Length: 304
Image (spheres, rainbow, N blue to C red):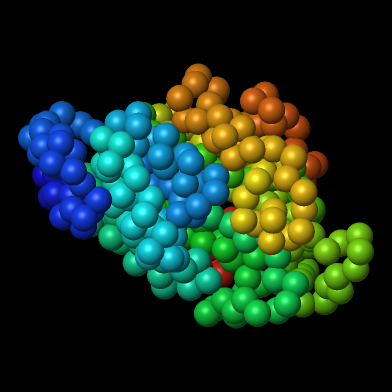
């Protein structure tokens, strides 16, 4: 099986992390591949919320595909999961490059016979200094937080559908701003004290529109799709980098994400504090959702 070979490679990759006992455990897990081991891909899982979710999934028996840009941090997360008795491997991709997103998706499609869970978590807060550059020339926050995940999800969709029951969790935010379809790349936007978070808020609302659209498209397939605001100003690198005093812990946010992974929560919902909550009004505009889908397909290239 493809998964069995992938787990074997992951064990070799992580051999420096393993003690004799965990090596034996990895061997017994490999022999148990006749049974289906759930596979989860968590984007942006080399630190913060994504790392904590990846660790918890490893402890629950998932084979975790850890994703990020930094190889050293990715290897450290894999080692931690394996040392705790789980299974994991690292895949690198910079979401400022849609070609790297395609490579990530194609690698998963090639190496795994099933994908039970996709957690779209990777994100950036802002590009206030103008240092981030998308290879495609798109607004970087919109691309990393939304468009890259749109492309990844679309490419992995056949595998998810063939792996049902499966779930998609989109990590969004309570910060939401309506998408201006006449200026999605914010070329005419001038930041000020009131709107400095608009790139982030627009990208997070786009995730919610995508969630609702996916839930409608996937109704009856067995793929459950939900989105959430995990917690307000968690103690993460993004929050600290912005100079904001954390108000919540990463554990609190991970609890909310895990709820959407393990509980009977339905599909097509936006959650805050563990409860379905109404999002920004634009999320319920069918024309806006269709327009965003059509724009996103155009931006990634219809061949995807």
